[in-house]
Amino acid sequence: MTQYELFLRLTVALAIGLLTGLERGQYEREQKEGSGARRITGMRTFGLIGLLGALCGLLAMQTSPVVLGFSFLGLAALMTASHIIAASEDHDYGITTVVASLLTFILGAVIMYGYISVAAAVAVIMTTLLGMKTLLHRFEANIQRYELLAVLKLLLISVVILPVLPNRGYGPWEALNPYVIWWMVVLIAGISFVGYFGVKVIGARRGLMLTGLLGGLASSTALTLHFSRICRKNPDLANLIATGILVSAGTMYPRMLLLAGILYPPVAQQMLLPLGLMGVVCFVSAGWLSTRPGKTSTDTSQTFRNPFELKTALQLGLLLALVTFFAHGLKNWFGDAGVMILAGISGISDVDAINLALARMAEEGKLVLDTAVRAIILAAIVNTLVKGLMAVIIGGKRLLLPVGSVLLVAIITGFLTAP
Image (cartoon, rainbow, N blue to C red; front, side, top):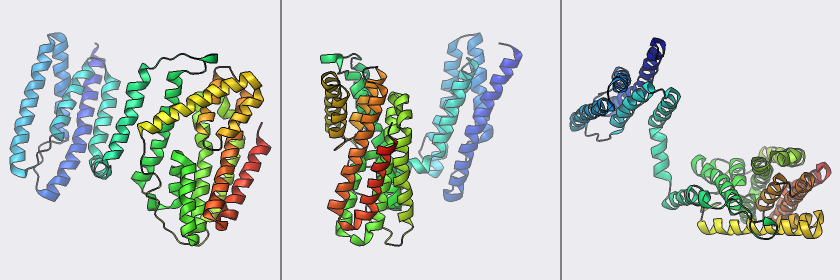
């Protein structure tokens, strides 16, 4: 290690300590102003801790790792004693600052071993987490137990189950790949989580356009059904309800592009014009409707009651497997016509399964790109038609013009611009 490298690493260790100390100093000053807590750490202390860790790491490199271990234990004992004394005065028993100081010491040592980028990244993450205390505590207080369980279930299917599944085709035409099918389940569930927790964090009462946007990430069909029922009971809300439905329907198209693009970008590129224009029709109409006078609030908090269930994942996996199997089978039996028939039928209830299945087939070379694109667009058109009919039949004639006519224009646009 040259002198330049040595001083560079010491400088980075000092910078990490100063950054952490700045955040801790700001926090403890606020505590002091509000509750009389005594400030025991700040920029100077944390800066010195960062340098201490770096120098102890240097000594350990020159002598023995035992030096670094005993140095860490000594600092831990010192910080613990200081924390106990401070806690006895202000009765604040949190150990966040102690942990941050120990981590700063470790990062200083890690820098001396050459992991400068890793240490800097960890320092930024640590400081960000420290600064987000209020936000994280608020989120922790608002999250329900069933939502926490839903997160754990999502982690179960993605981190535990997915890696152990075989990544090869089974059955006729080797159509069923357990790893790929389950990965698509994880992908859809993850995007749905974004919509659900978006509504949860931002608030469903902040506006139907926002709710429609986030709801479209979870399930535009479910949101259309829910909003149509609201409109039937509250006809005066027709314009706002229509706004939410159109935003939700419009969000489906970029969602489809995103899913297809992750699997096979050429499919998304080919669909960009028709699906993009269909989305524009919905969003522009929703924007115009949002300017119309009317009541401004309604309860959409129950639109999505449960973000995830293992049963739902299994059903989705089965649906994806069936769609994938029949897509291969109909392609082999009836050619492109069979794929188009399957796309039309699938679009009645869901577009994600057929979208992912055909994009995957195109990526594997088992389906011509143009055929896959036309079939996916057909599924989107059929699904849009179903949502329009659902809104008009359930919501009543007040949704005929603001929703039915707009979705009809979107359908025509998709037909005319499809490749």
